[in-house]
Length: 139
Image (cartoon, rainbow, N blue to C red):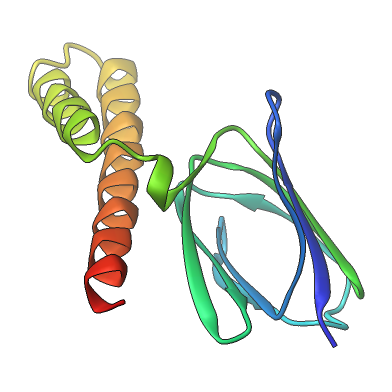
């Protein structure tokens, strides 16, 4: 019995489908969601969001947001979400390098925090893009 998942950003609906499992990065650590999960509302942290359907894992890069879990439905309201095949690895690498430079040049705690948040986001994007590349090679 699957669970219905909707992933939504301010710009668009990323996914609306029945899936077998969701693994999400939350403020309290990774959580795995299966059908009939207890109700839950949590904050998403930047990280890899994994969707499993018919035994196949599909990774997404999520930059944060909220997740509401009900027994037969999960709704993710995300700041940004990218499917692995949407990520331009070269641009993500360039953004990672720029974030590292900003972190080295940070003059205040605020600048440092912003640079580190950007760096975490770009590292997730790179990891998800690389997972997609590996998956394509194995197919």
